[in-house]
Image 1: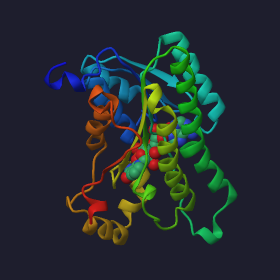
Image 2: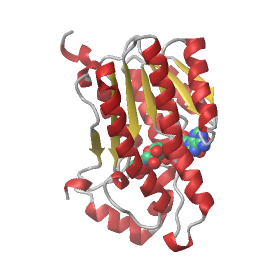
Image 3: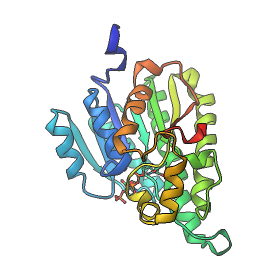
Length: 254
Ligand code: NAP
């Protein structure tokens, strides 16, 4: 293997959840440009992502699945594997956020976030590992964590609990599966311009506070996460296990 070939994803198939918009869309496009065929998983139309990938000659197949039903999502992964072929890369990106003071936070806002942001990640990872072990194939799992995997945050209690849990999940799955050729790692994006952060960006006080703390001096864009995803999906990261990579404009270094 020479030069940049080590980052090539030619011949690989990558399942990306929440690929219709935001960070998931940015990652799907980056993986496709590195050569991977994309299974774009989610509950909304994938047309925008399909157009962007096909414009560069890439291959993408939409797979409709609501990740609040984690058993159904795992079944969709198994079906995709059986019908379309082995999955080499799983990007657990889909996520939701609910805001409110902890003292008033509802059980539904706790459960909804846990189901999508943590339980479905585990169930999809388990489904992939079972298939990979049965067929004795290697695989790469990339979880999309958060600054809230390291910090407490404010008014997002279920999100912080889920993203902190996701850091632990990344480590334990790496411990159990590293010797069986599955790499489990995570990316912790900083403040990225997506639907998830719309409320913060529209709040002039919070928005200014956040911007002031980012050493890079600006918010990130979805495509800023793509390069690290390509690295973690490729042979370049074969000896990387259980790591959580901040891609945050320097926020955590502050
Ligand atoms: P986003 O634009 O709101 O995207 C969230 C994605 O998750 C969408 O594709 C959404 O699909 C999908 N999703 C949510 N619930 C789903 C469900 N039940 N079934 C299937 N798909 C579902 O936000 P984003 O910022 O790109 O978020 C992507 C990931 O990055 C999340 O895990 C988020 O926590 C994480 N993150 C974001 C930031 C940031 O600053 N933006 C920072 C750190 C981490 P729909 O469009 O159909 O709702």
